[in-house]
Image (tube, rainbow, N blue to C red; front, side, top):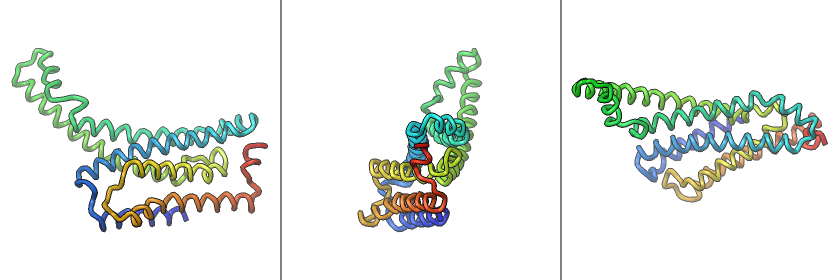
Length: 232
């Protein structure tokens, strides 16, 4: 069911971009999406940490110690997700020339006492190699971040390792946090408000409905409730 919802969401996103003009240029749209992806990863990582921490704090001391011993995979998932946006930021700043400039490279080679022509040649090749490497890292880290984001959201940061009720509790927190970020960030396409907000609300509402269904399923079929999970 989650996979079907994800596929429908992707299809709706492609249809929205193809049907309505972009609010900015193509380059602005791509760079904006990269930055949005990086911020979204941060929101997801922080949201998962806050949700799991709140669950642990609300549990009894005995349960808290037990849950704390199961945090290895959720923490690893959050750290792996954060690595993607970091690589994206480094590669984008490199392409912009903010990390190191042509003049800084020339000054470095001049400081080695090399002839002026050699300094110009070395700085040119260093910039060319750095630019190609930055492009490769940007492409690779973008694909990695997309896959990592999908896996982290789909598995809810391996929160099931802590308790099987946690994914259903954390998922709404994550998707509504992303919804708030999208509202603050502004729309990417000039679609009518009714189309735009229907699209934006589809994800959070469907995830919330699935979470409510999962909580009810665990309570009815497995007698798992939040009170019992916390040890009260």
